[in-house]
Length: 453
Ligand SMILES: *[C@@H]1O[C@H](CO)[C@@H](O)[C@H](O)[C@H]1NC(C)=O
Ligand SMILES: *[C@@H]1O[C@H](CO)[C@@H](O)[C@H](O)[C@H]1NC(C)=O
Ligand SMILES: *[C@@H]1O[C@H](CO)[C@@H](O)[C@H](O)[C@H]1NC(C)=O
Ligand SMILES: *[C@@H]1O[C@H](CO)[C@@H](O)[C@H](O)[C@H]1NC(C)=O
Ligand SMILES: *[C@@H]1O[C@H](CO)[C@@H](O)[C@H](O)[C@H]1NC(C)=O
Image 1 (cartoon, rainbow, N blue to C red):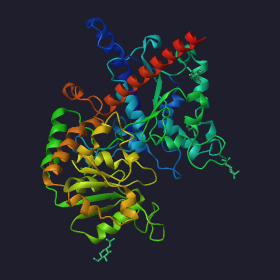
Image 2: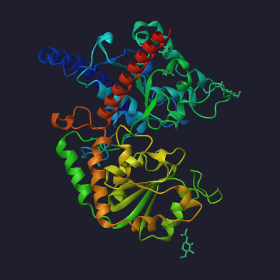
Image 3: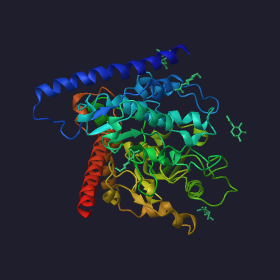
Image 4: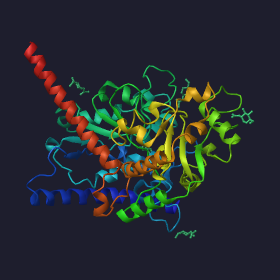
Protein backbone atom coordinates (compact mmCIF):
# COMPACT_ATOMS: atom_id res chain seq x y z
CA UNK A 1 0.00 0.00 0.00
CA UNK A 2 2.80 2.40 1.00
CA UNK A 3 4.77 1.82 -2.16
CA UNK A 4 1.66 2.28 -4.27
CA UNK A 5 1.14 5.75 -2.83
CA UNK A 6 4.78 6.65 -3.45
CA UNK A 7 4.60 5.48 -7.07
CA UNK A 8 1.44 7.39 -7.63
CA UNK A 9 2.62 10.63 -6.11
CA UNK A 10 5.77 10.36 -8.23
CA UNK A 11 3.60 10.25 -11.34
CA UNK A 12 1.41 13.13 -10.22
CA UNK A 13 4.48 15.16 -9.33
CA UNK A 14 6.00 14.39 -12.72
CA UNK A 15 2.88 15.62 -14.47
CA UNK A 16 2.78 18.84 -12.44
CA UNK A 17 6.54 19.43 -12.63
CA UNK A 18 6.79 18.80 -16.33
CA UNK A 19 3.97 21.28 -16.91
CA UNK A 20 6.06 24.05 -15.39
CA UNK A 21 9.19 22.96 -17.27
CA UNK A 22 7.23 22.74 -20.53
CA UNK A 23 5.91 26.28 -20.38
CA UNK A 24 9.32 27.60 -19.35
CA UNK A 25 11.13 26.08 -22.31
CA UNK A 26 8.38 27.32 -24.58
CA UNK A 27 8.94 30.91 -23.44
CA UNK A 28 12.68 30.63 -24.04
CA UNK A 29 12.05 29.15 -27.47
CA UNK A 30 9.92 32.14 -28.56
CA UNK A 31 12.59 34.60 -27.56
CA UNK A 32 15.48 32.77 -29.22
CA UNK A 33 13.83 31.56 -32.35
CA UNK A 34 11.98 34.23 -34.25
CA UNK A 35 11.86 31.99 -37.32
CA UNK A 36 9.08 30.20 -35.41
CA UNK A 37 9.61 26.49 -35.58
CA UNK A 38 6.24 26.18 -33.89
CA UNK A 39 4.17 27.75 -36.66
CA UNK A 40 1.17 25.55 -37.37
CA UNK A 41 1.93 23.14 -34.52
CA UNK A 42 1.05 24.97 -31.33
CA UNK A 43 -0.91 22.99 -28.81
CA UNK A 44 -2.83 24.28 -25.83
CA UNK A 45 -3.49 21.83 -23.00
CA UNK A 46 -6.92 22.58 -21.64
CA UNK A 47 -6.98 22.90 -17.84
CA UNK A 48 -9.40 20.37 -16.45
CA UNK A 49 -10.42 19.76 -12.84
CA UNK A 50 -8.56 16.89 -11.17
CA UNK A 51 -11.64 14.68 -11.31
CA UNK A 52 -11.06 14.28 -15.04
CA UNK A 53 -7.50 13.01 -14.68
CA UNK A 54 -5.37 12.96 -11.51
CA UNK A 55 -8.18 11.92 -9.21
CA UNK A 56 -8.96 8.99 -11.49
CA UNK A 57 -5.40 7.77 -11.02
CA UNK A 58 -5.68 8.12 -7.26
CA UNK A 59 -8.75 5.89 -7.39
CA UNK A 60 -6.78 3.21 -9.21
CA UNK A 61 -7.80 0.44 -6.81
CA UNK A 62 -11.46 1.44 -6.58
CA UNK A 63 -12.77 -1.05 -9.16
CA UNK A 64 -11.19 -4.25 -7.94
CA UNK A 65 -12.17 -7.05 -7.90
CA UNK A 66 -14.50 -6.39 -10.87
CA UNK A 67 -11.54 -4.83 -12.66
CA UNK A 68 -7.79 -5.08 -11.94
CA UNK A 69 -6.27 -2.75 -9.45
CA UNK A 70 -4.18 -0.76 -11.95
CA UNK A 71 -2.07 1.16 -9.42
CA UNK A 72 1.13 -0.80 -10.20
CA UNK A 73 0.90 0.12 -13.87
CA UNK A 74 1.08 3.82 -13.07
CA UNK A 75 4.69 3.67 -11.89
CA UNK A 76 7.34 5.50 -13.94
CA UNK A 77 4.92 8.02 -15.48
CA UNK A 78 2.60 5.32 -16.70
CA UNK A 79 5.21 2.97 -18.15
CA UNK A 80 4.67 0.53 -15.28
CA UNK A 81 7.28 -1.20 -13.15
CA UNK A 82 10.56 -2.29 -14.67
CA UNK A 83 10.70 -5.92 -15.77
CA UNK A 84 13.83 -6.38 -13.59
CA UNK A 85 15.49 -4.07 -11.12
CA UNK A 86 18.34 -3.51 -13.54
CA UNK A 87 16.45 -3.28 -16.78
CA UNK A 88 16.74 0.13 -18.41
CA UNK A 89 14.23 0.09 -21.24
CA UNK A 90 11.77 -2.70 -20.40
CA UNK A 91 8.65 -2.17 -18.28
CA UNK A 92 5.52 -4.10 -17.34
CA UNK A 93 3.41 -1.67 -19.33
CA UNK A 94 -0.33 -1.91 -19.51
CA UNK A 95 -1.94 -0.41 -22.62
CA UNK A 96 -4.67 1.10 -20.42
CA UNK A 97 -2.25 3.73 -19.13
CA UNK A 98 -1.77 5.30 -22.58
CA UNK A 99 -3.78 8.28 -21.32
CA UNK A 100 -1.45 9.46 -18.50
CA UNK A 101 1.55 8.39 -20.59
CA UNK A 102 0.44 10.52 -23.54
CA UNK A 103 -0.37 13.41 -21.22
CA UNK A 104 3.05 13.39 -19.58
CA UNK A 105 4.76 13.18 -22.98
CA UNK A 106 2.71 16.12 -24.26
CA UNK A 107 3.92 18.18 -21.31
CA UNK A 108 7.41 17.87 -22.86
CA UNK A 109 6.16 18.98 -26.28
CA UNK A 110 8.24 21.98 -27.43
CA UNK A 111 5.35 23.98 -28.91
CA UNK A 112 2.91 24.27 -26.03
CA UNK A 113 1.07 27.55 -25.61
CA UNK A 114 -0.84 28.95 -22.66
CA UNK A 115 -2.93 31.04 -25.01
CA UNK A 116 -5.78 28.99 -26.48
CA UNK A 117 -6.41 31.53 -29.22
CA UNK A 118 -2.84 31.03 -30.49
CA UNK A 119 -3.22 27.24 -30.56
CA UNK A 120 -3.55 25.10 -33.68
CA UNK A 121 -4.94 22.28 -31.57
CA UNK A 122 -6.36 21.94 -28.07
CA UNK A 123 -5.62 18.81 -26.05
CA UNK A 124 -8.12 17.57 -23.49
CA UNK A 125 -6.17 15.78 -20.74
CA UNK A 126 -9.17 13.63 -19.90
CA UNK A 127 -8.44 9.98 -19.03
CA UNK A 128 -11.41 8.69 -20.98
CA UNK A 129 -10.93 4.94 -20.66
CA UNK A 130 -10.05 5.13 -16.98
CA UNK A 131 -13.15 7.22 -16.30
CA UNK A 132 -15.17 4.71 -18.31
CA UNK A 133 -14.50 2.15 -15.56
CA UNK A 134 -17.17 3.83 -13.40
CA UNK A 135 -19.69 3.06 -16.11
CA UNK A 136 -18.41 -0.42 -16.88
CA UNK A 137 -17.63 -1.79 -13.42
CA UNK A 138 -18.77 0.83 -10.95
CA UNK A 139 -21.86 2.46 -9.56
CA UNK A 140 -22.87 4.01 -12.91
CA UNK A 141 -23.21 0.70 -14.73
CA UNK A 142 -26.72 1.59 -15.87
CA UNK A 143 -25.79 5.08 -17.10
CA UNK A 144 -23.09 4.49 -19.69
CA UNK A 145 -24.98 6.73 -22.13
CA UNK A 146 -23.96 9.62 -19.84
CA UNK A 147 -20.21 9.13 -20.25
CA UNK A 148 -18.85 12.49 -21.39
CA UNK A 149 -21.80 14.67 -20.42
CA UNK A 150 -19.96 15.97 -17.35
CA UNK A 151 -16.91 16.85 -19.45
CA UNK A 152 -18.94 18.68 -22.05
CA UNK A 153 -20.77 20.64 -19.35
CA UNK A 154 -17.43 21.75 -18.02
CA UNK A 155 -16.18 22.79 -21.48
CA UNK A 156 -19.27 24.91 -22.02
CA UNK A 157 -19.17 26.50 -18.59
CA UNK A 158 -15.47 27.16 -18.11
CA UNK A 159 -14.14 29.62 -20.67
CA UNK A 160 -16.68 28.56 -23.33
CA UNK A 161 -14.87 30.56 -26.02
CA UNK A 162 -12.13 27.92 -26.30
CA UNK A 163 -14.55 25.31 -27.61
CA UNK A 164 -16.79 27.75 -29.47
CA UNK A 165 -13.96 29.31 -31.49
CA UNK A 166 -13.91 26.32 -33.86
CA UNK A 167 -16.91 24.32 -32.71
CA UNK A 168 -14.58 21.78 -31.08
CA UNK A 169 -13.01 20.84 -34.43
CA UNK A 170 -9.55 21.68 -33.07
CA UNK A 171 -9.91 19.58 -29.90
CA UNK A 172 -8.38 16.13 -29.43
CA UNK A 173 -8.01 13.50 -26.76
CA UNK A 174 -6.70 10.00 -26.24
CA UNK A 175 -8.77 6.92 -25.42
CA UNK A 176 -6.91 3.80 -24.35
CA UNK A 177 -9.21 1.34 -26.04
CA UNK A 178 -10.84 0.45 -29.33
CA UNK A 179 -13.43 3.01 -30.51
CA UNK A 180 -15.91 0.18 -30.18
CA UNK A 181 -15.64 0.52 -26.37
CA UNK A 182 -16.99 4.07 -26.57
CA UNK A 183 -19.54 3.89 -29.34
CA UNK A 184 -22.50 2.01 -27.95
CA UNK A 185 -25.85 3.34 -28.99
CA UNK A 186 -27.21 5.53 -26.18
CA UNK A 187 -30.54 3.78 -26.74
CA UNK A 188 -29.16 0.32 -25.89
CA UNK A 189 -30.73 -0.63 -22.59
CA UNK A 190 -28.97 -2.27 -20.92
CA UNK A 191 -25.79 -1.44 -22.83
CA UNK A 192 -24.15 -4.47 -24.50
CA UNK A 193 -20.62 -3.28 -23.86
CA UNK A 194 -18.88 0.06 -23.47
CA UNK A 195 -20.08 3.62 -23.17
CA UNK A 196 -21.61 6.08 -25.65
CA UNK A 197 -18.94 8.81 -25.48
CA UNK A 198 -18.27 8.87 -29.23
CA UNK A 199 -21.98 8.69 -29.98
CA UNK A 200 -22.74 11.97 -28.21
CA UNK A 201 -23.37 14.68 -30.85
CA UNK A 202 -21.48 17.03 -28.51
CA UNK A 203 -18.27 15.17 -29.39
CA UNK A 204 -18.79 14.54 -33.10
CA UNK A 205 -16.29 17.27 -33.99
CA UNK A 206 -13.32 16.29 -31.87
CA UNK A 207 -10.49 13.96 -32.84
CA UNK A 208 -10.05 10.88 -30.68
CA UNK A 209 -6.87 8.81 -30.76
CA UNK A 210 -7.77 5.18 -30.06
CA UNK A 211 -6.18 1.73 -30.42
CA UNK A 212 -8.66 0.68 -33.06
CA UNK A 213 -11.02 2.72 -35.20
CA UNK A 214 -14.39 1.66 -36.52
CA UNK A 215 -14.57 0.49 -40.11
CA UNK A 216 -16.31 3.62 -41.30
CA UNK A 217 -14.73 7.05 -40.91
CA UNK A 218 -15.74 8.86 -37.74
CA UNK A 219 -13.90 11.17 -35.44
CA UNK A 220 -11.25 8.64 -34.41
CA UNK A 221 -7.79 7.63 -35.64
CA UNK A 222 -5.95 4.49 -34.52
CA UNK A 223 -2.48 4.78 -33.00
CA UNK A 224 -0.20 1.95 -31.79
CA UNK A 225 -0.75 0.15 -28.51
CA UNK A 226 2.14 0.82 -26.14
CA UNK A 227 4.60 -2.08 -25.94
CA UNK A 228 6.90 -2.79 -22.98
CA UNK A 229 9.95 -1.23 -24.62
CA UNK A 230 10.59 2.42 -23.73
CA UNK A 231 14.19 3.39 -24.44
CA UNK A 232 15.49 6.71 -23.17
CA UNK A 233 18.50 7.12 -25.46
CA UNK A 234 19.49 6.40 -29.04
CA UNK A 235 22.17 3.81 -28.14
CA UNK A 236 19.60 1.82 -26.12
CA UNK A 237 17.24 1.81 -29.08
CA UNK A 238 19.99 0.83 -31.50
CA UNK A 239 21.48 -1.89 -29.30
CA UNK A 240 18.07 -3.51 -29.06
CA UNK A 241 17.37 -3.28 -32.79
CA UNK A 242 20.81 -4.75 -33.46
CA UNK A 243 19.99 -7.66 -31.19
CA UNK A 244 16.70 -8.24 -33.00
CA UNK A 245 18.49 -8.02 -36.38
CA UNK A 246 21.10 -10.64 -35.44
CA UNK A 247 18.77 -12.93 -33.54
CA UNK A 248 18.84 -16.57 -34.63
CA UNK A 249 15.36 -17.63 -35.73
CA UNK A 250 14.97 -21.40 -35.76
CA UNK A 251 11.15 -21.23 -35.67
CA UNK A 252 9.22 -20.40 -38.82
CA UNK A 253 6.19 -18.88 -37.07
CA UNK A 254 4.74 -18.19 -33.65
CA UNK A 255 1.51 -17.13 -32.05
CA UNK A 256 1.10 -15.70 -28.57
CA UNK A 257 -2.35 -15.13 -27.21
CA UNK A 258 -5.44 -16.69 -25.81
CA UNK A 259 -8.12 -18.67 -27.55
CA UNK A 260 -7.86 -21.67 -29.77
CA UNK A 261 -7.73 -24.09 -26.87
CA UNK A 262 -10.01 -25.27 -24.13
CA UNK A 263 -9.92 -21.87 -22.39
CA UNK A 264 -11.58 -18.55 -23.11
CA UNK A 265 -11.36 -16.37 -26.18
CA UNK A 266 -14.13 -18.13 -28.06
CA UNK A 267 -11.78 -20.86 -29.18
CA UNK A 268 -13.00 -23.82 -27.18
CA UNK A 269 -13.22 -27.18 -28.92
CA UNK A 270 -16.98 -26.91 -29.05
CA UNK A 271 -17.11 -23.44 -30.58
CA UNK A 272 -17.45 -23.01 -34.35
CA UNK A 273 -14.24 -23.12 -36.41
CA UNK A 274 -12.22 -19.91 -36.18
CA UNK A 275 -8.80 -18.69 -37.16
CA UNK A 276 -7.26 -19.05 -33.70
CA UNK A 277 -8.34 -22.65 -33.53
CA UNK A 278 -6.90 -23.33 -36.98
CA UNK A 279 -3.59 -21.78 -35.93
CA UNK A 280 -3.47 -23.87 -32.78
CA UNK A 281 -4.22 -27.04 -34.70
CA UNK A 282 -1.54 -26.31 -37.28
CA UNK A 283 1.02 -25.47 -34.56
CA UNK A 284 0.27 -28.70 -32.73
CA UNK A 285 0.71 -30.65 -35.94
CA UNK A 286 3.95 -28.99 -37.00
CA UNK A 287 5.81 -28.37 -33.77
CA UNK A 288 9.15 -28.06 -35.54
CA UNK A 289 7.91 -25.02 -37.45
CA UNK A 290 5.55 -23.31 -35.04
CA UNK A 291 5.59 -22.10 -31.45
CA UNK A 292 2.35 -21.50 -29.59
CA UNK A 293 2.67 -19.30 -26.50
CA UNK A 294 -0.46 -19.74 -24.44
CA UNK A 295 -1.43 -16.39 -22.97
CA UNK A 296 -4.90 -17.39 -21.80
CA UNK A 297 -6.27 -15.66 -18.71
CA UNK A 298 -4.01 -12.65 -19.20
CA UNK A 299 -0.83 -14.40 -17.99
CA UNK A 300 1.35 -12.55 -20.54
CA UNK A 301 -0.08 -9.08 -20.10
CA UNK A 302 2.51 -7.70 -17.70
CA UNK A 303 5.19 -10.24 -18.36
CA UNK A 304 6.80 -9.32 -21.69
CA UNK A 305 9.56 -11.92 -21.32
CA UNK A 306 7.02 -14.67 -21.96
CA UNK A 307 6.38 -13.51 -25.51
CA UNK A 308 9.40 -11.36 -26.46
CA UNK A 309 11.85 -14.32 -26.36
CA UNK A 310 9.71 -16.48 -28.68
CA UNK A 311 9.20 -13.45 -30.96
CA UNK A 312 12.98 -13.05 -31.25
CA UNK A 313 13.29 -16.75 -32.14
CA UNK A 314 10.65 -16.70 -34.85
CA UNK A 315 10.71 -15.50 -38.48
CA UNK A 316 6.97 -14.74 -38.69
CA UNK A 317 4.46 -13.72 -36.00
CA UNK A 318 0.79 -14.55 -36.53
CA UNK A 319 -1.80 -11.89 -35.65
CA UNK A 320 -5.27 -13.38 -35.95
CA UNK A 321 -8.23 -11.26 -34.82
CA UNK A 322 -9.56 -11.98 -31.32
CA UNK A 323 -12.40 -10.15 -29.61
CA UNK A 324 -11.50 -7.25 -31.90
CA UNK A 325 -9.33 -7.25 -35.07
CA UNK A 326 -6.30 -5.38 -33.67
CA UNK A 327 -3.85 -6.52 -31.03
CA UNK A 328 -0.99 -5.14 -29.04
CA UNK A 329 1.22 -8.09 -30.04
CA UNK A 330 1.48 -6.63 -33.56
CA UNK A 331 3.75 -3.94 -32.13
CA UNK A 332 5.63 -6.17 -29.65
CA UNK A 333 6.51 -8.46 -32.56
CA UNK A 334 7.68 -5.65 -34.85
CA UNK A 335 10.10 -4.52 -32.18
CA UNK A 336 11.43 -8.09 -32.09
CA UNK A 337 11.94 -8.03 -35.88
CA UNK A 338 9.30 -10.70 -36.33
CA UNK A 339 7.47 -10.25 -39.66
CA UNK A 340 3.72 -9.79 -39.10
CA UNK A 341 1.17 -12.10 -40.71
CA UNK A 342 -2.32 -10.60 -40.84
CA UNK A 343 -5.58 -12.37 -41.60
CA UNK A 344 -7.83 -9.39 -42.22
CA UNK A 345 -7.31 -5.81 -43.44
CA UNK A 346 -8.62 -4.10 -40.34
CA UNK A 347 -6.04 -5.80 -38.13
CA UNK A 348 -3.57 -3.09 -39.15
CA UNK A 349 -3.62 -1.88 -42.75
CA UNK A 350 -6.81 0.13 -42.53
CA UNK A 351 -5.92 1.35 -39.02
CA UNK A 352 -2.42 2.72 -38.49
CA UNK A 353 -1.88 4.88 -41.57
CA UNK A 354 0.01 7.57 -39.66
CA UNK A 355 2.57 5.07 -38.35
CA UNK A 356 2.76 2.26 -40.92
CA UNK A 357 2.32 3.35 -44.55
CA UNK A 358 -0.76 1.57 -45.94
CA UNK A 359 0.69 1.36 -49.46
CA UNK A 360 3.72 -0.58 -48.21
CA UNK A 361 2.28 -3.58 -46.40
CA UNK A 362 3.59 -6.07 -48.98
CA UNK A 363 7.11 -4.93 -48.15
CA UNK A 364 6.94 -5.75 -44.45
CA UNK A 365 4.01 -8.10 -43.82
CA UNK A 366 2.14 -11.12 -45.19
CA UNK A 367 -1.61 -11.19 -45.70
CA UNK A 368 -3.45 -14.53 -45.65
CA UNK A 369 -7.26 -14.18 -45.76
CA UNK A 370 -8.63 -16.04 -42.77
CA UNK A 371 -11.37 -17.73 -44.83
CA UNK A 372 -8.69 -19.53 -46.87
CA UNK A 373 -7.32 -21.04 -43.68
CA UNK A 374 -10.50 -21.74 -41.75
CA UNK A 375 -12.85 -22.84 -44.54
CA UNK A 376 -10.47 -24.15 -47.17
CA UNK A 377 -7.73 -25.62 -45.01
CA UNK A 378 -4.86 -23.58 -46.48
CA UNK A 379 -1.68 -24.25 -44.50
CA UNK A 380 -0.14 -21.07 -43.10
CA UNK A 381 3.28 -22.73 -42.84
CA UNK A 382 3.18 -23.74 -46.52
CA UNK A 383 2.45 -20.14 -47.57
CA UNK A 384 5.31 -18.82 -45.46
CA UNK A 385 7.78 -21.53 -46.53
CA UNK A 386 7.17 -20.55 -50.16
CA UNK A 387 8.49 -17.00 -49.65
CA UNK A 388 12.11 -16.79 -50.95
CA UNK A 389 14.79 -16.25 -48.28
CA UNK A 390 16.05 -13.01 -49.79
CA UNK A 391 12.54 -11.64 -49.70
CA UNK A 392 12.17 -12.66 -46.05
CA UNK A 393 15.41 -10.85 -45.20
CA UNK A 394 14.22 -7.70 -46.95
CA UNK A 395 10.91 -7.81 -45.10
CA UNK A 396 12.57 -8.21 -41.72
CA UNK A 397 14.88 -5.30 -42.47
CA UNK A 398 11.87 -3.14 -43.30
CA UNK A 399 10.08 -4.22 -40.10
CA UNK A 400 13.09 -3.10 -38.08
CA UNK A 401 13.27 0.21 -39.97
CA UNK A 402 9.64 0.85 -39.08
CA UNK A 403 9.92 -0.33 -35.45
CA UNK A 404 11.06 3.05 -34.02
CA UNK A 405 7.80 4.55 -35.35
CA UNK A 406 5.65 2.32 -33.15
CA UNK A 407 7.68 2.67 -29.95
CA UNK A 408 6.70 5.09 -27.19
CA UNK A 409 10.08 6.27 -25.96
CA UNK A 410 10.51 7.14 -22.31
CA UNK A 411 9.66 10.61 -21.02
CA UNK A 412 12.78 12.75 -20.57
CA UNK A 413 14.72 10.93 -23.27
CA UNK A 414 18.04 12.15 -24.65
CA UNK A 415 18.02 14.98 -27.23
CA UNK A 416 19.44 12.60 -29.79
CA UNK A 417 16.58 10.15 -29.40
CA UNK A 418 14.02 12.96 -29.46
CA UNK A 419 15.11 13.78 -32.99
CA UNK A 420 13.72 10.36 -34.09
CA UNK A 421 9.97 10.37 -34.46
CA UNK A 422 8.27 7.83 -32.22
CA UNK A 423 4.64 6.72 -31.96
CA UNK A 424 3.76 9.78 -29.88
CA UNK A 425 5.41 12.28 -32.24
CA UNK A 426 3.68 10.77 -35.27
CA UNK A 427 0.34 10.80 -33.46
CA UNK A 428 0.69 14.50 -32.68
CA UNK A 429 1.79 15.36 -36.24
CA UNK A 430 -1.09 13.37 -37.67
CA UNK A 431 -3.57 15.06 -35.37
CA UNK A 432 -2.36 18.53 -36.38
CA UNK A 433 -2.64 17.56 -40.06
CA UNK A 434 -6.12 16.14 -39.58
CA UNK A 435 -7.35 19.22 -37.72
CA UNK A 436 -5.85 21.58 -40.29
CA UNK A 437 -7.52 19.66 -43.12
CA UNK A 438 -10.83 19.65 -41.26
CA UNK A 439 -10.73 23.40 -40.62
CA UNK A 440 -9.78 24.14 -44.22
CA UNK A 441 -12.62 22.06 -45.61
CA UNK A 442 -15.08 23.71 -43.23
CA UNK A 443 -13.88 27.11 -44.35
CA UNK A 444 -14.15 26.19 -48.01
CA UNK A 445 -17.58 24.76 -47.31
CA UNK A 446 -18.62 28.07 -45.81
CA UNK A 447 -17.24 29.98 -48.78
CA UNK A 448 -19.11 27.71 -51.17
CA UNK A 449 -22.24 28.01 -49.14
CA UNK A 450 -22.16 31.82 -49.07
CA UNK A 451 -21.39 31.88 -52.84
CA UNK A 452 -24.44 29.71 -53.44
CA UNK A 453 -26.72 31.92 -51.37
C1 LIG B 1 -12.69 8.58 -6.25
O1 LIG B 1 -13.17 7.79 -5.18
C2 LIG B 1 -13.88 8.53 -4.23
C3 LIG B 1 -14.22 7.61 -3.07
O2 LIG B 1 -14.83 6.43 -3.54
C4 LIG B 1 -15.13 9.13 -4.87
O3 LIG B 1 -15.86 9.90 -3.94
C5 LIG B 1 -14.71 10.01 -6.03
O4 LIG B 1 -15.83 10.51 -6.71
C6 LIG B 1 -13.83 9.24 -6.99
N1 LIG B 1 -13.34 10.17 -7.98
C7 LIG B 1 -13.40 9.94 -9.27
C8 LIG B 1 -12.91 11.03 -10.16
O5 LIG B 1 -13.83 8.90 -9.75
C1 LIG C 1 14.51 -5.15 -6.53
O1 LIG C 1 14.52 -3.96 -5.76
C2 LIG C 1 13.62 -3.99 -4.69
C3 LIG C 1 13.58 -2.61 -4.04
O2 LIG C 1 14.83 -2.01 -4.06
C4 LIG C 1 14.04 -5.11 -3.71
O3 LIG C 1 13.13 -5.15 -2.63
C5 LIG C 1 14.04 -6.42 -4.46
O4 LIG C 1 14.48 -7.46 -3.62
C6 LIG C 1 14.90 -6.36 -5.70
N1 LIG C 1 14.73 -7.57 -6.47
C7 LIG C 1 15.73 -8.23 -7.01
C8 LIG C 1 15.38 -9.47 -7.76
O5 LIG C 1 16.88 -7.87 -6.90
C1 LIG D 1 -28.76 -1.73 -13.06
O1 LIG D 1 -29.94 -2.24 -13.64
C2 LIG D 1 -30.22 -3.58 -13.27
C3 LIG D 1 -31.41 -4.05 -14.08
O2 LIG D 1 -32.41 -3.08 -14.09
C4 LIG D 1 -30.46 -3.63 -11.76
O3 LIG D 1 -30.73 -4.96 -11.37
C5 LIG D 1 -29.21 -3.14 -11.04
O4 LIG D 1 -29.43 -3.08 -9.65
C6 LIG D 1 -28.82 -1.75 -11.54
N1 LIG D 1 -27.53 -1.41 -10.96
C7 LIG D 1 -27.28 -0.24 -10.38
C8 LIG D 1 -25.93 -0.05 -9.79
O5 LIG D 1 -28.10 0.67 -10.34
C1 LIG E 1 -19.75 20.83 -34.76
O1 LIG E 1 -19.46 21.50 -35.97
C2 LIG E 1 -20.60 21.98 -36.65
C3 LIG E 1 -20.15 22.50 -38.00
O2 LIG E 1 -19.03 23.32 -37.89
C4 LIG E 1 -21.28 23.02 -35.78
O3 LIG E 1 -22.44 23.49 -36.43
C5 LIG E 1 -21.67 22.37 -34.45
O4 LIG E 1 -22.23 23.32 -33.59
C6 LIG E 1 -20.45 21.78 -33.79
N1 LIG E 1 -20.84 21.03 -32.61
C7 LIG E 1 -20.55 21.40 -31.37
C8 LIG E 1 -21.05 20.49 -30.29
O5 LIG E 1 -19.93 22.39 -31.09
C1 LIG F 1 -2.42 -33.09 -38.68
O1 LIG F 1 -1.69 -34.20 -39.18
C2 LIG F 1 -2.49 -35.33 -39.47
C3 LIG F 1 -1.59 -36.46 -39.85
O2 LIG F 1 -0.58 -36.06 -40.72
C4 LIG F 1 -3.50 -34.98 -40.54
O3 LIG F 1 -4.35 -36.08 -40.77
C5 LIG F 1 -4.34 -33.80 -40.07
O4 LIG F 1 -5.21 -33.38 -41.10
C6 LIG F 1 -3.46 -32.65 -39.67
N1 LIG F 1 -4.27 -31.58 -39.11
C7 LIG F 1 -4.13 -30.33 -39.45
C8 LIG F 1 -5.03 -29.38 -38.78
O5 LIG F 1 -3.31 -29.95 -40.26
